[in-house]
Every structure is written in structure tokens, then in C-alpha cells.
Image (tube, rainbow, N blue to C red; front, side, top):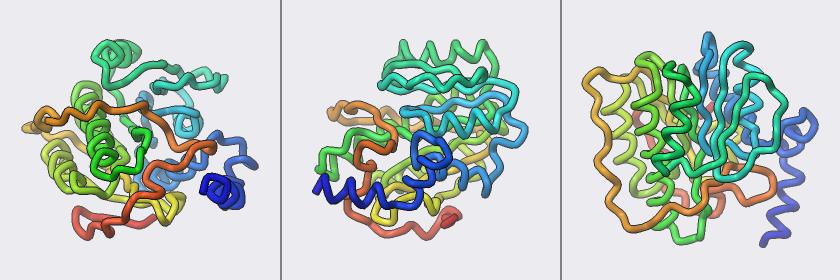
Length: 247
């Protein structure tokens, strides 16, 4: 299975396109396609990217934000990008100490865009993988509540599992506009979708504490050396409401 998967990966369009154009991950094109549709980088000066390794989204954000600050955080060390407007943090974003460091990098300023491409190391037990993914998504939502400006944008990856609809309701309780999107660059067999949201509600409410004894495993980004989070997970079908789009 791994050798077959690697063969398919290396003959895949966006994998080869990333290699040719110097991006560290095929996931770069997911972010490019999302931004082309919603334009969240237009006029933005401060961006947070969670689950940033190996740096594909950081490259896109850094190119889009010509002046300002892009902060990337991941458990894995991110090889230097040599972009003056990009800073990185190595740490577990579910840890309150790391969260404080993330907020500190913005020096009291609000972020224009908060991105989360975080995903757990999938173990193949769908119920566990789904719970871990939603835990990370809710962590990102909590950070956005503290850091994002009121008219800012949030983009967060989720799996289409049992907790998916509950999380969408939580996003709608936080934001005035919420869309569910699957970019063309997402693999067809993947259960991942992206929730794109704008305008924090003044009367917003955060999700309740995630009641599970399942501890999130290492956060990983969709790079070109590991199986894509969600690739081999069951497909629960595509949601039809909340303004879903296929880019």
C-alpha cells in the first residue's frame, strides 16, 4: 500500500506542480485556490498559520503579504524559508504556553487572517481520528477568538465525520458568514474539507470544552512525504448546506 501510494503521489498533478514551482507542499495550491475564490489576503498584513510544516501555506501567505507578518506554528521544525516577513514557532498549539507565545508574536495587534491546516496523525480508527481532528479545529477557533480582528477571515480544515456538523454550527455561532469548500487541489478520495469564515459575531459564543479523553497526537501538515490526512478515511458524502462550494 505505501509503495503504491507513493507512486500515485509522484505522478499526481499538484505534487509535480509544487516541485516545478518551488513550493514545499501540494497543499500550497489548496490555499491559492481558496484565496482566489474569497480574496482573504487582499489588504491583509498579519496572518497566523497553524499546522504550518513543511511550509507550503507559509510560502503562499508570505508571497501574498508583501509587508507585515506571517507566523507559522507546528510541532515539527520548519526549514527556514528565508522570507523576511515570516516567523515560525515549534510547539504544540494545544498547549496554553505555546498559545501565549503565538499571541505574543503579534505584539498586541489583531490578525487579519487565521489559517489552520492542522490534522492529527491518522491511525485508521475513524472515530478517534475524527475526534482528534475536531479537537484541533476547536483549538484553532479558540485562538481565532483571541487573535482575529472582527472583520477578519478564518480558514480551517476538518474531516467530514460525525462531529463535522456540530463544528459547523459552532462556526456559525462565531462568524456571520460560513462556507464549506473542497478545493480542486484536495485529493478526490480525501474526507477533508475547508471551512472559510468571515466577520466575528459580536454576540459570539465559543464551543464548550471538548469532552473526550482522547489526547490529540502529533499535528502534521499535508506534505509530500506522508499520507494525506483523510485520504483513506470513509467518505460521508458532501454536505449540501451552509454555502458549500467546489472550487
